[in-house]
Image (tube, rainbow, N blue to C red; front, side, top):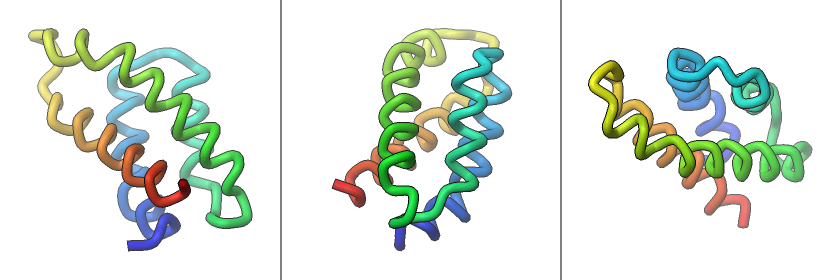
Length: 91
């Protein structure tokens, strides 16, 4: 699957997963912006956003995993996997 196909198919779900969890405006904005970008034209922006979202997730995933209030934990794992896949394909 190409990066643009991953963005089209997977990023909407990832964005909604993030929005359901956080109120951090920058993180929500990064996730929303990723939906609009095209590879390879926006490769640099995609790289920056993916790295920022992965950094955020690495800081949050322990809290997400331990929380009794989050029912969609597997969606967060899938979101991390989608971001990691995009990152691997760009490098």
